[in-house]
Structures are given as C-alpha cells and as structure tokens.
Length: 188
Image (cartoon, rainbow, N blue to C red; front, side, top):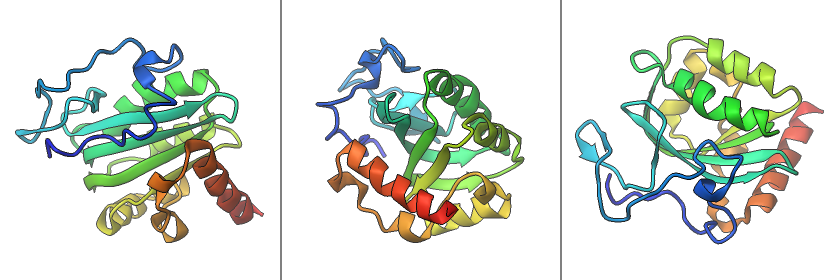
C-alpha cells in the first residue's frame, strides 16, 4: 500500500495545500516519512488523514467557478465501525460546500471494502448540494454492491459508464464536462 500514491499529474494546476478554500490548506507533507497506516500497512505520506483509521483521501482538484471537486480515496470505507462518512461530511465536504462546491467526483479504485450503516450523512450531503451531484468512478464491484445494499445509490451514482471512464487521461475541467453531460442526460 505504501507505493500507491494519489494521482499527481494535476499538481501543476492544483494543490489542495496551497488553496485557501481547501480544508487541507497549509498542510505540509513529507515525501519520505511514512507514518499513516491502514491496518498496520503504511500508506504514502501524500494521502490526507480525515480522522478515520481506515480511509484516507486526496483532493486532486477543486474548481470554484465550475463548482466541482475530484477526490481520490484509499483504504476501507467503514461507516459501521469508524463512521467514515461523518468525518468526510463534517470535516471535508461541509467546508467545500461552504466554498461553493456542488458537484463531486469520487475516485474509488483504491477503496478495498465498504461497510455501511446508515444513509443519514449521505442524504444530508445530497440535500446540501441542491442541484449538484455525487458520482463515484471506478469503485470495485463488491464495494458498489455494498453501497447499493445500504441504499446509498440514491445519493451517489455508481457503475455503468462511470466505471469505464479512464479519468487519468482527462484534464479536470474536461472530466467534469464529460460527467456533467452524462448526469444531464440521465436527469432528462
């Protein structure tokens, strides 16, 4: 796990630690000192701690004019024991919503498991973004099944086209435009 880094090709255009609107503004990172773990496995020091013992993330990009953010995750999404959605919603998403972010692209290929509990925070997140959307890209099939088993697909769109997008080949605004076009067609 320590070799899995957050996607870094957009660092030339956005760094959350340098964005005054970001919940991670001012954070300093080490390239060499590994201290964070998921189940005793060290993870790369560029991942951001959100208060969860098993779920870390990286805000890869945020655009306040277009009102979207791309967030990559690693670890186990565990609402049943760790209440990860509470940390995500209260400490990250609420700040982003206050800054005008209404559309969320969640990258889940490094999420190994999901253990659901309640849909309260997901419903609150969905309500708070008004006409926005939350889309999960490239989550593993068994993880999507777990989200769906808890009814969370009412709030986050997964699967189908969204698992076929090679998101790394896009620039952030182009990725947003592609997903937004899918969402507009879906809603119409």
